[in-house]
Amino acid sequence: MLSTRIFVSLVGIPILILLLYLGGIVFSVAIGIIAFLSMVEFYNFFSDRNIILNKELGLTLGAIFPMIAYFFGAIGLIGAVSFSLLIILLWKIISDKAEISGAAITYIGVIYVSLSLSHLVLIEKFVDGALFVFFTFLATWIADTSAYGVGRLIGSRPLAKKISPNKTIEGFVGAIVINVIIFSFLIWMPLLTFYERVIFAASISVLATLGDLVESSIKRGAGVKDSGTLIPGHGGFLDRFDSMIFTGVGSFYLILLFIKI
Image 1 (cartoon, helix red, strand yellow):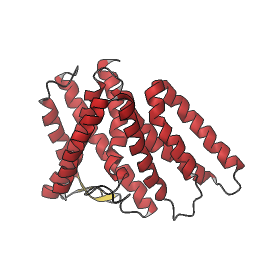
Image 2: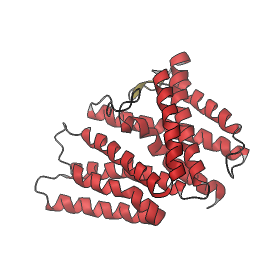
Image 3: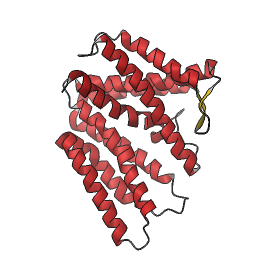
């Protein structure tokens, strides 16, 4: 329900503000926990698919990505991506039962979830990074809630019927419009001009929808409705942060483009 989604988002805002106020290692650990729990749900998608993957290895590698982002930055993440691939392929070689499909899913879980979410840690390390992280979350929440609300009110044309029948073109457009209007008035958003705020809001809206559709596609392929039931109105952690997987990465590169860090 829309009211439940709004309530969960409102509860999440003070928690996010507290984590950003504490910042640094505390925020990085929090992102690591979110990534870990989301990866558990991702790997559980394939538990009944007769695919042999190394869940423990994937979770271990994924859990350290936010820490690498905190201590070593983007260069460290590049090294972690390569190192993870080598480790997973080594497991494939020495395992008698492992197949390339299992190794691929193990690796995808690390990259799709943990690498992507680790970009939030990179953003937090910027000057005014805590504010940029907050605005990334805010724009993503606005996009998700607006798309759902507008879609329920006036939506009639499906956006991607085979992947997510409930998503509508009207909801998608409404999310962009509402986000752009709100961010147009955020004159205290640091270092960004009016036009940059508009581009930021529109881009985050599009990326949030893509992130949601990607997870819906994965769940549909795995025959799963929700990734979990831990968060009311949203399902599991991956259902709640699927949009952030895309918007965190997009926000990082938009900020680099805009303020030339």
